Length: 279
Image (cartoon, rainbow, N blue to C red; front, side):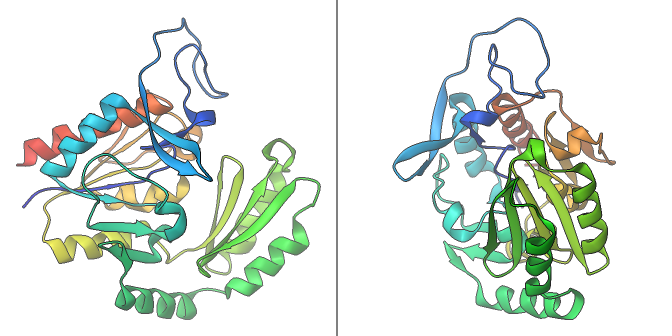
């Protein structure tokens, strides 16, 4: 059977203009050095009629090949509505994981049986969403919080002015949330609070069971991707992001040097090479 490729999207495969880190225009965590010719980009997401996310043209070509070689499963913390804004090169994937594993899409529709299993698990193991949301409202400062949002009635996140967020607040929130069965992750301008059992890896395992696919290949850049990378037979993380900032790695996980959109291109290239080798 073909390999199953489960990849995070934002800042792993696709990149906003602010996250591109193109040669000659480095981002805040990009290495120094001389400028190199910028790659050709392809827009893969529009929001309110404006381009929002990109891949390189080379990555786009590789993604089309990957769809013919492996079972490709986009695996994201985005809500279903946010995911549907994306149009990746190649045929639409039959399976996709949204809301950090809260929704398993099959031909674009959320699987009701998977929804039921997830909600029962969260009710049994975690503090209620309302309790976590209220704690965020009471402890976060309006001076640096731009908005508080609930995603799919499953988890909550803040959009913040990151430079003003006290580091101690994030750490204290992590301790408080951990005691209640929740995980905290800081990604760019967003602070996520997500139930610990709500994982990408669980949904990917279900896809592997349904498809009978071979080895699982994974990629991601944030703490919320760590379970996916650990569960994969082989995995990659870019040289930027939450995991790279902490030096996180594990057996079977390759830490790449590339950052920004060129890291996304490298990840797709590695996926395709490994999927072909398996076949």
